[in-house]
Amino acid sequence: MRLPILPVVLCLSVSVSGCGTVRSKLAEESQVGHPYSGVSYDALAAKCLWKQTTENGTSYRSGVDIAAFASVYLVIDGAFSLLADTAFLPIDFAVTPRHERVTADKMCGESLSP
Image (cartoon, rainbow, N blue to C red; front, side, top):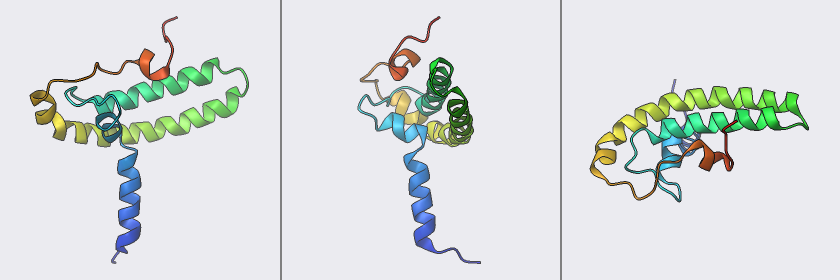
């Protein structure tokens, strides 16, 4: 069975554009030089997402449904980010980071401390 090329390329490009590694390495504050920044990005995104749903008093139930769905996506993306981050290790060790590593406080826009 032969798959049409265009749909496969479109699916792969959409998948790669959502990859934590791609987002962290090509961001305005590039994380090049920080090993495993893609996996870290996915973990921080999940943390921010769940923090938002637990503090949002307007639609807790729909917020939890969206957070649960997004968390499944982030776990799957995390596995691919792990592979991509491992491939980037030689570059990350050879380059001095130009920006600080992104933290949960910076990514979520507020302090996550209780």
